[in-house]
Amino acid sequence: MKSIQTKITLLILAVIVVCSSIIGSAGIISSKLVIETDSAEIINLMCSDKAKEINNILGKIEQSVDILAVFSESNLESTKALSDKDYLAQYIDTIDQLSITAVGETEGATSVYLRFDQSVAPADAGFYRVKNSETGRFELVENTDISAYSPGDTEHVGWFYIPVRNKAPTWLPPYRNANININIISYCIPIYKNGALIGVVGMDIDFNYISNLVDSIKVYDTGYAFLVDSDMRIAYHKKILKGQSVSELNSIFLNKSPEDFTKADTIHSYIFNDTEKKIVFRLLENNMYLAVTAPVSEIDKTERQLVDRIIKFTILIALISILLSSFIAKSLIKPLKELNNAAKDIAKGNLDITLVPKTKDEIGALTGSLRDTARELKKRIEYINELAFTDTLTGIGSNAAYLRDVMAVKETIAKGTADFSLAIIDVNNLKHINDNYGHDSGNILIIQAAETAVSAFGKDRVYRIGGDEFAVIMNNVDEATAKLLAERFVLMLKEAGGRIVAAAAIGTATYSKLYGDSYDTVFKRADEEMYRRKAEMKEKGECSRVIM
Image (cartoon, rainbow, N blue to C red; front, side, top):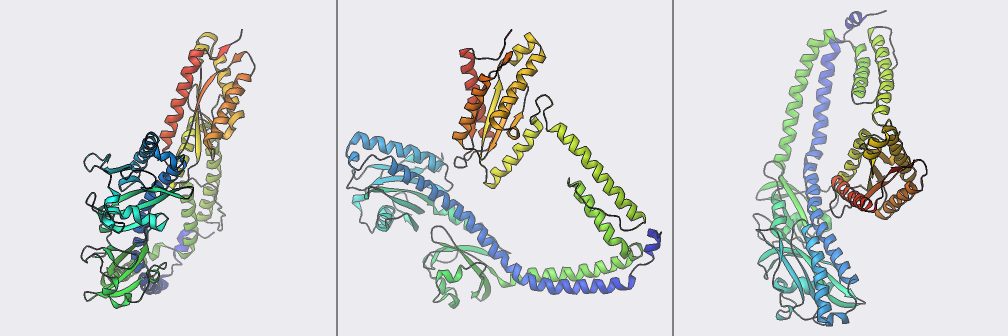
């Protein structure tokens, strides 16, 4: 049997210098090829990420206004009903209350409004709420007199006439709203009832909010971002006047459409103020374009620095490798890597590793020992997990299993894919039965409640999280189904026979992404409903009892 000491004598000292040189040269060549693309792609990725961030804000505005528009149309009895002052006032108040909630939950919104066409309601009918910069509340301000301005007066009434003219939801380009003296962009939707125009509902975003996001974009040392409109004219730039054509920056932009500059992964080169630059564009929800640009010299700087580092590290590695070559054998590298990877897998909890001793030396013996250790450890962990995640009395999920699965649910909430309902169950009168009839009777009560919950909801969903308290996590179950399952549980519990009659209060709640729910808020609603039910049952005398 050859020992490790014997194998160390078979070192490849002559090869290590050649390998280091080859690796270093390959690294330099590869880095130049990759960095020439990837360095510029940093701009592309930055532009895409920031465009998504801005589009997320604009998308929330669209969603909120869409909700208001649908609600306004569906809650209107008829256009004739608006001639009734009392009905009109009640209708406006209903939409106004929804708008307060919608605009309060909409990032970046600065105002919300509903105005009517003069053919169906008075010129001053509707509401206009503007965010108070000091209190953060959306307060009512005086409605703009639409009849006092011509349809072409964009600064005063463009938010009304432009979407009406388009007969469709419309994003207005940045403009100064003369009614509140704020630079804004607006999203407005005309409302129709049975084909007749009712009015317009919309929200505004303070354009400074968007421009601050744009100013926060930094690429390399002096790279920056700006906005252009659908005609490729400057909409916002820290140094260039609004309205200037992008083609004036460089002739490369002449006779080009916006689509020519927004193709995926397309990066354009141009010269501005005698500086060679690269630029990328991304289309935004409101038909503007986000542009990100940086000097080519700064992009190449990263490449030069990386190549220098590769050369230095290659030389350093070659020297270190030569010094250490007397202690490293080529035949050891592969098995040691396998052992190292296996050890990492074990550390991460992956015990399904495949290790086969390929030699009869110390490494082979160590490989066999590590394999046997992983197998034995897996058996012990499975046994421990079974004990930890199973409630010993009822056989359902324990509190530890519940906390584990709650973390999984929270991860789906963070990813935006959550879809679940929650039920909280509390067994009534457990302490009284324990005190008066003994803990054996109390255990029977708990087991009966657990078995009924399993029958109603399924074993994988039910957890015992306290002495007399259970939780049920129902993935992909909507609110109506959760209520039906809860009613089924209550009915089954009442129909269960035996010496001990079980009674339990149950509360349910369903996750809603629209209202920004967290797992804790869903749990709180379910818990509150359970306690309300518990109080009602107490008043009615519905409690667990022992039949003698």
